[in-house]
Length: 237
Ligand SMILES: [Zn+2]
Image (cartoon, rainbow, N blue to C red; front, side, top):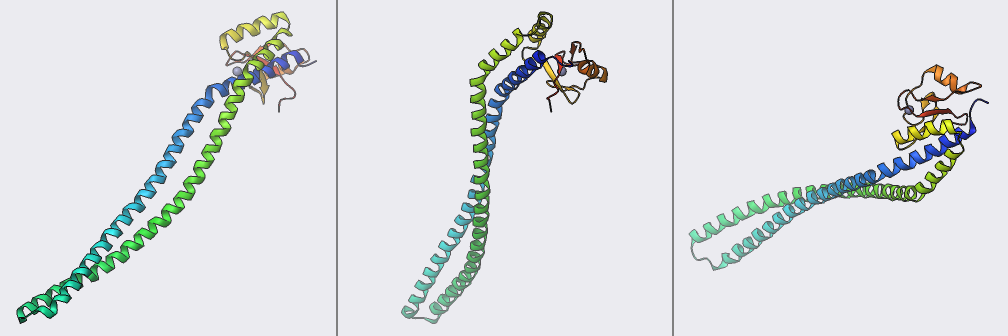
């Protein structure tokens, strides 16, 4: 027999517990990080809206001015019939000419402002769609991670009990080594070898270690880096 099924079972239970504890440690931060990302996207959304609102405000201001000058021009024109002297008439004509010139300028400015405002609106709408999609994606990811966290919380004790039960099946000498490593490492004391690396710390193991683990009568080997007990699991992908 080249690998001890009791040890393999223990290594599998240890790996599950290690993974659960890793999730419990890492998920809260990842969930919080997603809050930050959501805030950033929300901010982009508000900035696009802000640019559009600014263009609209500029457009409305110009339109209001155009309206005022047009009203003034109409008033000037209505005064024409009440004038008595040529001087007054010429002064009024100059006033009307100045007003016409300003109306002409403002009409061009309003057209340009409308164009800028329309472009800002198109950009805002496109960005809004993009940001909303991104927000939905982040929200869904967060929901998923919260579920993962809840299920890790719910199963960690059960998994801990399964691991403890698996430890009891191990022969006493190996068990005492296991318990010693566990006290030092606190999370997992045994690792399956995967692709010649320690399944927990991922350190590459020397070929002779692998040979000894896979041999007919495997001797206990520990990871060269993390010190966890190594076990060869033929079913490990
Ligand atoms: Zn290791």
